[in-house]
Amino acid sequence: MNGFEVAQHNSEDGITILRLKGFLDAHTAGDLEAALQKCIDEKKFRIVVNFEELNYISSAGLGVFMGFIEDVRENGGDIKMTSMTEKIFHVFDLLGFPALYDILKTDDEAVERFAQTEKE
Amino acid sequence: MNGFEVAQHNSEDGITILRLKGFLDAHTAGDLEAALQKCIDEKKFRIVVNFEELNYISSAGLGVFMGFIEDVRENGGDIKMTSMTEKIFHVFDLLGFPALYDILKTDDEAVERFAQTEKE
Amino acid sequence: MAKKVKTYQLKVPSSTDQLEIIREFVTGVARKVGFREDELNKIELAVDEASTNVVKHAYAYDDRKPIEIQLRVEPDRFVIQITDKGKGFKPEQVKKPDMKEYLAKMRVGGLGIYLMKTMMDEVEFSIDPGRKNRVRMVKYITPETVHPTRKVS
Amino acid sequence: MAKKVKTYQLKVPSSTDQLEIIREFVTGVARKVGFREDELNKIELAVDEASTNVVKHAYAYDDRKPIEIQLRVEPDRFVIQITDKGKGFKPEQVKKPDMKEYLAKMRVGGLGIYLMKTMMDEVEFSIDPGRKNRVRMVKYITPETVHPTRKVS
Ligand SMILES: Nc1ncnc2c1ncn2[C@@H]1O[C@H](COP(=O)(O)OP(=O)(O)O)[C@@H](O)[C@H]1O
Ligand SMILES: Nc1ncnc2c1ncn2[C@@H]1O[C@H](COP(=O)(O)OP(=O)(O)O)[C@@H](O)[C@H]1O
Image (cartoon, helix red, strand yellow):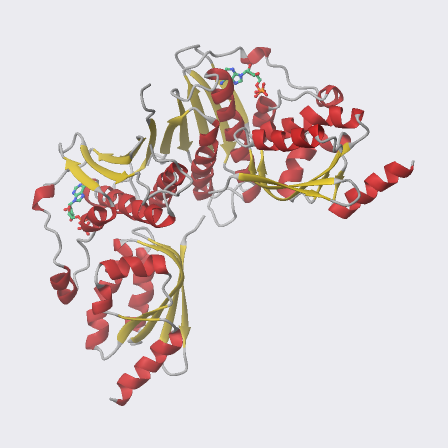
């Protein structure tokens, strides 16, 4: 069946990209939590989460991001979100998440955004 | 969801090709029956059934072919089957259908086979 | 002639690894009803949230307990009932989350019932702790929610 | 410690347009058990044939009647029970089709029970006409039938 996967890529500019795939619900949220916790443990606070291949998200999945964003930002980093399908964006949008998170079209835009913040 | 479709193509050499798609079970067998009945009614007795995009077949689907083969052959025609996936062939094979039906790799082979019978 | 009503029932162990089977069952029936893709997505999410609550809150992750989903397809509505025999709760005390405050405080949970209410046309709880706690959610069958090829009665 | 058994139950109207939902439910659970793709195909076909028989023979296409599918995942076996309250039949009088004769005479039906028996490890009927007719089919969970990553108990 479907399942859920997180693939981690480390870009050369010290940014970590997490590519989500499949179905993010109360069953699989723990996997995302583990992946984000690993970033924190390794002091990788500049995180891009790519949603391109994510087919589904429930509030359990949304909650994971809420659980980490504060910690990440306090350490000078951020969680930026990219490449959401309309279906997924709809849920984020409905809950007003765009007010709290940077939601961008592409990973490049997210990386660019990190570079800008650096300069400031 | 899945459903079932039959697409009919008439080749120039008077052969009718039926391309099956989707799931052939007791619910959808009637659609195949209607398509074959239409061939008979139009006196198209040289029939190629292409299974390439058929994902599933149950005995209700197998039964449809049994219901027409005699009639078709008595009229000098045949039902030849092509492009089965391993999954589908497995069911036909298990029941010994290859002894009764020409099961071929491609539509071209089936057309060729019809041409040969013509010459004999 | 009486209008036809079709009923469906699914009973699975109460654990999060069943959510996928539950979602597929409900969307399978809802797709057959003729609901549009975006309505299917809403129904799927509402059912997931309600089922997750049963697993988490009603039974505290005890997978020996059953979760029961009942569907009724009526001429003008699709009715989903999710039943547990768990500890129950006071739905009237669950506040609608203030999303501004929610986001400001970066809370982790508390969105499930809100999403259910947003996704469905009716959401109603009936609670009898330990015996029968049930959430009943309704999606109307209208020209807006179903495919045009489906004739709405 | 007692070995864990998980049970699942599905109840849908008895009509052929439910076959897809039935197949998806059973293969969904069986996939979770860890069965290999070819075993999933066999289970899917056996369940379809048994369910088709209920729709066709037990209830003669009366879709107000329910068809019930029960699944049990035991440590070493996957048990499927399909129950109807229809007219029943005498399973011992259903002859194994002679495929040579079958093909020679180009018969149209009569393959369902044969396929069920070929696809599954055990097939057993218990008949009580009008009350409870049940076919019980078993697929063993062995290193041959499940994926290597799944640990067989
Ligand atoms: N089926 C249920 N059984 C018991 N309590 C429930 C049930 N559904 C909801 N609740 C209660 O309602 C509260 C709000 O639920 P919800 O909005 O889904 O948010 P969350 O599950 O994230 O807490 C839960 O925290 C729980 O106390
Ligand atoms: N659930 C059932 N209720 C009543 N009769 C049944 C049932 N299942 C099978 N039968 C009987 O057994 C016969 C053989 O079934 P089967 O091998 O599936 O072939 P077919 O359904 O094509 O006749 C059927 O014709 C029917 O008389």
